[in-house]
Length: 405
Image (tube, rainbow, N blue to C red; front, side, top):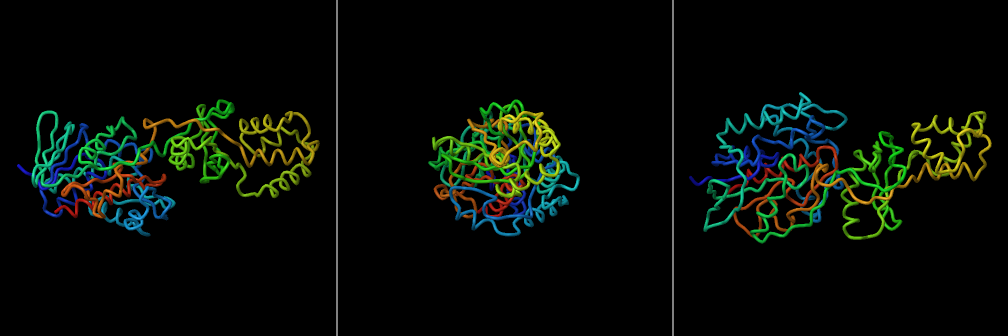
């Protein structure tokens, strides 16, 4: 049998493409290397599956080809995702702009896809690891371990390299390269960062809101504000994840030392913070310096600041001079961590880089090979935390599936 389209990978993008193509009355074969659908979906959003976000600007999603993304995304893109899932019988709930399945369980998303694929007559085959894809005249030969399949069109939806436990092994890149398609070098994204700072062990387990700024060669590159998680190996948390793409790029290009500088008091300018500390000390000058800091920060963090400033715990806060207070304000505004790397693809949520968007038409068909499409994480597109990666995966899959010729 020659299928209208063979889709490689039952990822979010692959299943979305299968539903869209089947609704256009195409015969669809979906090949999945795992033993189940959407294995990676299960762990997204800590198992709650953040599908979309009502907030969007052009910096929420990144790529070397900005023009392609600007054509694809627009304000209100999230409503297309919500409408798609409503058509599958899945309603969503909004929490501060973040959209989740109403059950708050990622498995509900997989059930909705499974039911839709079955009802639309999509043939799904599991444990089918694709070894090669070859085009012969007007059809593709998709070769697996034990059998070959034929399709007039092929959609690559294998995902990238992030979270290999879910089956992501980068095999889609090799399939694309076999057709002469160019790739942007890949790096882990949305991943914890490693630091050789001696204070990491001391701060392990602390969570604290801060403004995190990436500095390369002393220059500010990007900033994110929110909760930072301190670990024995370095830094984690959403703000760190959002900066990790740029950190890894900077380290890759040997641009010099990468430093994450934490502003623990972002609501104050330096001079305002000096005045604030001075006011607090003036009103509670009897308090010990260590106790004063522990009234401001978690105990472990207060201890680190005390050590960095060279203050003794038991001295009276009122004994701190102007220079001492300015030193405390400076350390509070610029607590620095030298970054040596990241935790890699094992702990990454997505992949930066991949198939260059320069190779793609706006319907996600490949310019060099008629009938070949690529969608989702396989492409050089990665978003911040907040549902943006799933939004892109789902919408790119729908777009490709609807435009199968």
